[in-house]
Picture 1 (cartoon, one colour):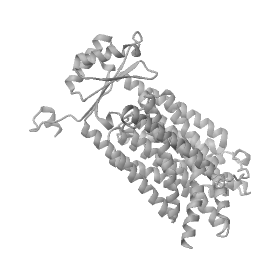
Picture 2 (cartoon, rainbow, N blue to C red):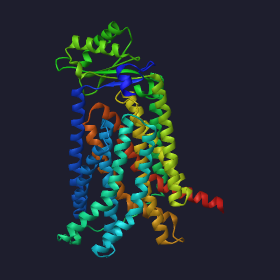
Picture 3 (cartoon, rainbow, N blue to C red):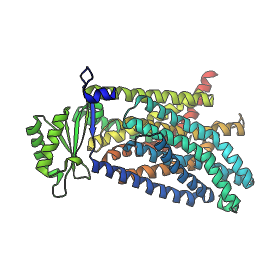
Picture 4 (cartoon, rainbow, N blue to C red):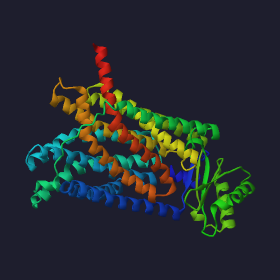
Amino acid sequence: MASTIRIGALPISLKEIRSQVVGAKLGDSAIQSSLLAGVIGLIIIIAFMIAFYRIPGLAASIALIFYVGAISFTLNCFNVTLTLPGIAGILLSIGMAVDANVIIFTRIKEELAEGNSLETSMKNGFDKALSAIVDGNITTIIASVILLLLGSGTVASFAKTLLIGVLLSMFTALFVTRFALNALISLGATDVKFFGKAKKTKKFAFVKNFPKFVAVALVFIAICVGSLIYNKANTGTILNYGLDFKGGTSTSVAFNKDVVADDIKSDVEKLVKDTLSVNPEISEVKGKNTLTIKTTVLDKAQREKLSKAVSEKYNVKEDTIESETISASVSNEMKRDAVMAITVAVILMLLYIAVRFKDITFGASAILALIHDVLIVLMAYGIGSALGIITVGNTFIACMLTILGYSINSTIVTFDRIRENRQAMGKKADLEDIVNTSVSQTITRNINTTLTTFIMIFMLLLLGVSSLREFTIPLIAGLIAGAFSSICLTSALWYHVKRLFSSKKK
């Protein structure tokens, strides 16, 4: 088939529905800046882990370095095409790989605080952390598989790297970290003070303060709705849809230093009209001497004609000009896939929670908290669209599912502790006290995991190219929203849902 197409002997006509041309220099720059962000982020995370967790942190750092090497080797073996969202998936999975270690080390600290020996504390710590690690990672795996089945191109690349990363992170945390810890102990690192002891948990009244937390959430949800209404009134659409969702051709031109992109917008617009007889939308890429030219769908000849005209007039090398074309049929398909992917993933994740915890109230409260997280991410997209710094494209699906998986992961850790404390404290124990105790016991884990993941994403925002910034800004908003909901909303919400279900049964 491939040979037949190449020699032109296929007895049918082919219609171009999508094409992409990436300038070599811009591509190299994007990859280099992304890898630099990863290296710096990794160094910061290693320093944080050693400073906070001491000997266990050193073991986690060794496992993390092994993890980076293992994921690089695995991606090469499976011949995974590395795109910018794919790199983002790797860096995000590095941040998430720390999560399992944080859960384990928190458990070890608690065991040491109870007076157990180092050997017993390690064994119990790994055993007690296992269920939370497996349950949390399975939800992320569900999101990755849905992306693989319904996504394509860069989204599929993101899903592959994230899926491989999650599987490897479980392996490194449960086996490599344990091996590294045992090796350090055998070398003489047996002083308990270098392993840390859990301090007595100060219980906070999360259930009592639930109305205040809801009020804070409602303020941000109102901002979300307001930004969408503002965009609809000013642009006719609630979000700034990119080519993936509306079709067309986008051409990015990086100008030389002797030309200021913002000063020549009108000249470029006239050039496009004269060259192609179409009305373009010209926008500047913030922080870059680059203009983006959006038009209706251009064929190959028209794209080459435009590149040549811009190159000759502004002395720009053609190999630095990027273009992307997506037909209207493909963009409509992407919109449909986006809705389907998010819906299917949420249903499967919540079904898993309900089955795993044998209680529908856990799933019911989790879905209400997820709605909050989705709306906060939409707020980031809405404000970004209003400011003209974010477009909604195929990475929108990846961003949403990543945040849903991350938020569910954090929620499961707290739910797992609630389940454990209900068994330990007995059926007669006050339910409100169980919830407050459980959230207080897991709050350090939630904050540390959010912080390490944030470090990776923030480095991408700081050093990455503009296309990655469109991905990282909503991710950061989602990370913060997920941490807030898993700490302040979900468990207290479960308490009220549980009481509601119990009263109906009576």
